[in-house]
Image (cartoon, rainbow, N blue to C red; front, top):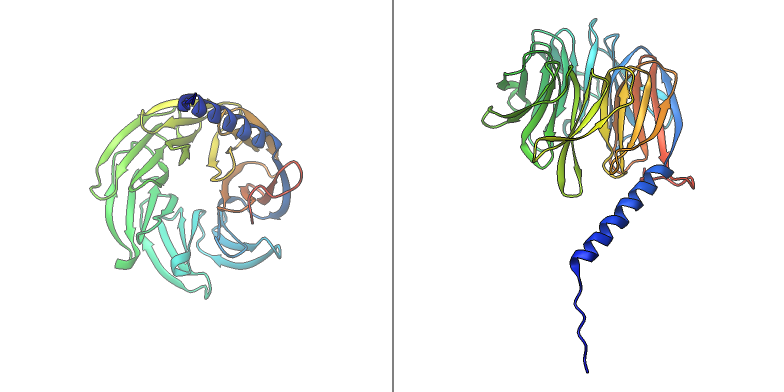
Length: 336
């Protein structure tokens, strides 16, 4: 007699979930972090990686911006921007530009091939803390100590098309939602995270996130669920369920302000940087601390990675470090 067996999809899903959990956990524990390059310099406040050239863009507290070649380990280009500290600099690859924000409140735009200055904008009345570039539209968002976030349209001669007001202290960073590019989050020293609608300019909601100021904010996906991660002067980083608006995990262990966070797009790790001089690596699934890295360049201010690359870059008080992430057998964990 023919017997029919029905598949219990619930059990299959549970099995796959357990399998993936332990597979990612094992992968995170087996990763190796190998120092590839150290470039000593003045204090590095921000780093960015070019997506196709072997270039690191470094914003320096001295007022300079440098492009370092991590293959030749030499300075490719250098820009004397201002006498004030530069806290943010981004590659705008669509135009062959770099966009730079400084403590004098100016945004400056340079062609990185010719070094020609394209634009100099009196953007804010106080320090510019952060610049982010929209993934598809000709927009740059700037965040400032004047408590404002401004939207700039470079196709309309860098007109300021919107101003977002609501924070009660310095705005330290903003981040676009990769799943809804009309939405962005901002982090402030007022201890809140605010979620904004870019088109309307309206505030969607506010999270009273930390007991002290927040220095950094980033979106990331875990499975098909959206999350935020924030880093604070309360020495912690927090992971937020974006849909429920609840904190699902507090990452504790740093002994000074958390200055930068990063969730790798392919590897199952969260990276936090701190003024305590360490980089901490956490398992993205279990949130367990997997590694603590210290490179002896004093405070760590910034981190950058590139999709499909095994390299991670850190900017510190005394220079820049390039670290290669590999498996326990020495193989790259992501293709360069």
